[in-house]
Length: 245
Image (cartoon, rainbow, N blue to C red; front, side):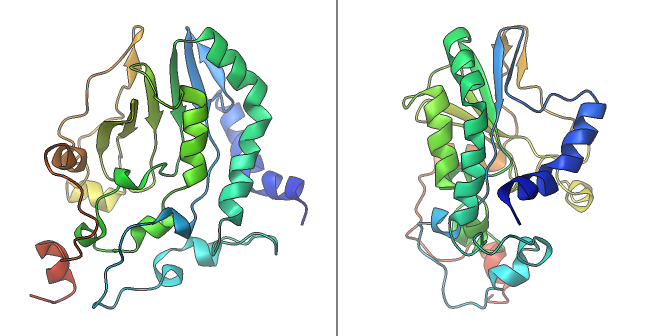
């Protein structure tokens, strides 16, 4: 299978439907605001924090449907960084447009499905599936974001991400990272991650970025509490889930 066919297979149908709906899928400037979508995929080495031991955690293959539902050419795999590198390289096709946006726009929003930094996910001891960080993000995605917004970021730099369904709104090294999940219907029924009455969050209006999402449980928690990934003592709700209390 050629790389061209792979790209067509993954994005062809979606791209055609988006075009038919009038949705812009490329990097673009709208009313002076630069908007840059970024391709990405996760890799296990994204997770650098201490693993949880002493409990029986389902394997990645069992927990993540990607390992069963997605078929890749022989040189690409979910088990290493090859997919993350492949998807990141696809962003090079937009480089000329991105450079133009950088030179003409003082405000830029980048966005991706996957997570660019591990600290944008709760620590493993807080998670019902402690191995989640191994299937959520990409180091190359963060590098790509920094190449667009600048290493130090700015007050007009914002990245919108998804995938984990944790409501998040935090500034890290000068870039605002936002996830405003609508979540699965069952999560909405349980009023998780924002609740059943949430609407899409307005991130930018009338020439300026919006105020913070509120409530925003996890990023609010880490704004007041330091991250301690070396602590592997399970949170009470996780311990109960694994029948340890």
